[in-house]
Image (cartoon, rainbow, N blue to C red; front, side, top):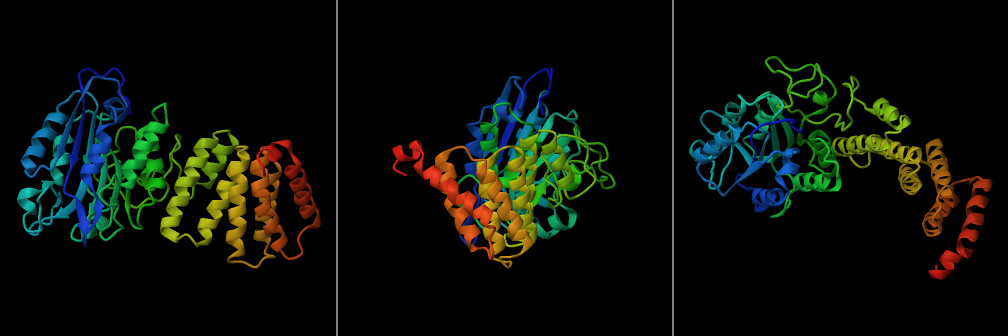
Amino acid sequence: MQIEGSRGRGHVLLVAGDAAVRRGVVQVAPSANLAALGVVPAAGLLNSEVPSDTTYLDGVRDPNTVLMRLRMAAATPGPLLVHLSGRLTVDRRAHRLHLALAGTTNASVRWTALPWEWLAVELRGRPAGSTTVLLDLVADKAAWPPLQEHGGPPVTPGAEVYGVIRPPGSAGGGNTVSSYTRHWIDQLHSNPNRPDRLRLHTLAAAAAALPAGSLVLPSARELGGHRAPPGRAPAAGTPAGAPAAGFPVPVDDPSPAAGPPVPARDPRARIHALATSGRHAEAADLARAWEQHVLRTCGFTSGEALEWLEIRADLARMADDFPAATRLWTTAVRTRLARQPADAPEVRAAATGALYCWTRLEDPDTAAGAGLELLDLLESLPDPDPGHLRLVRRRMELLNRSPSRSRTGS
């Protein structure tokens, strides 16, 4: 969120906690995440052009050092971004949530880790809409059950919170930038108009291939306008009736699109409205995000996943992106053939969609390459439509005679 007319300086506080390692496999490398974010201009991280300072905390062992830096950052009058990366754990006695710091062990959590409640206390007095907390975390075995029970860590309602918390035992990424942070930075670089953080977060979470069960903040309930839990006030910028962005639950509807709250959990109506109004990029982004959610929750071989593949294919058609539409419809045909009879109506419908989009391809090389696979698929169907076969064969003959393909040796 850009803070228009902010006086004073802004601040970026990047905190790398302890690495999350399980059975010798690094699940999150906080130092790598901090280094990657450190090369991004502060103006991009803050989405503001106000003068700003950046503080890097990597390898810190004393929680009071982090507290001092957090307190100084919270005192800035301008926009503030706090990034936390590392491992979440709980202390044995009080079972309070902590961010493990360098050297934190199960027995030393109370003295060597940062109590999570300190974050809320220090940020509580910040002006509404001026604070963003960005998280890329892994929970250990002790922290994961309470996080699941409560839907995630509590954060002051005045902060906008975005990020992911992966469960213990999830696949590691080695000593490299984690997928969520990497895609968040990639989206920031690839969008010259500096999209808002909700859109950055949604696209990054969708592309990150998160493990099943990961907590994604904010959730669909927050984006979809569900009522806030008792005792929580909506954060600045949250649609009316939606809970604070600091109350995470597993993702349901990772909508990047601006607009009024969507009461339905399934976003198809919203996607169709976006596409028919010409907002094709937003429709495609929302469909990709929801497809990733379906893949994580239902599996790659589920019927729901196939339905969203076909929805994306039709969105590409509506946007006149016929190369993508042809590719997606062809993939849908092959996927359906692997699990349904070849004469099933859904198979034939997908084949018809692929054929139509293929006929709209203008580049000879692209059309010829896609045509070979399409012809093979049509010929594999029982009682194929002879008109369709004639159309593809005739066009393939013309494409192979085209001067441009002759010059390339095709």
